[in-house]
Length: 281
Image (tube, rainbow, N blue to C red; front, side, top):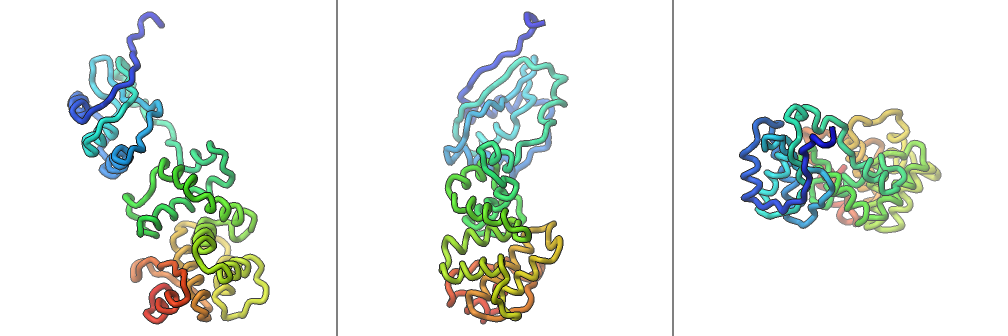
């Protein structure tokens, strides 16, 4: 009955000392994820922490039953932030917390009204990694949070243009093509960039040994590299570099166990130098 409820809600300025005190009340919780704590701590340090209604939860005996990672992040960041706090929840409710599906980056982009959010999200993940200089990394600490993705969407509106372009092309509808187009059309030499992507789209007036022709044939193969978009991106980067350097190619391969992730070159001299040293081709 409503009159018997003792649950209380409040907004609290959680200092590192208070976070440590609350963590000391915890009886059981999920295994701590260091990667998640680090990400949250970075949000706090960089003033990107948002009071979003997700609460720190205590049971009716005062024991912490949800909020371990957020409180640990306050300790790591050594900075106070405001948090929602709920007290007086039944202890038996612990097993029901966070059982729903987490909101994905594409969910958040859809909520912003973005079309093609399922394609835009992985494109922005590549953008995030490139800004860190770790493009193609599979290390969890090099993957952006949903908050990062939403911020990048605002910072790089031209990425949305490339996604819209790729969405309208049957066999170019993938994150690798959209990301590479965003980079080279934004930062590369305009004539070469236009030729490359027009050639991929139409296939017109292409020499059989041209890098664009080889890349287009690769993209036409059904189901190519669907399980790992990094592989397709690596091959496409090699195709772009070869096109920019004016070097003919009939095939592109990438062996992650034997070579680093290719660099996107934006000058002819840089691409030619990469070919000379067998890097990026």
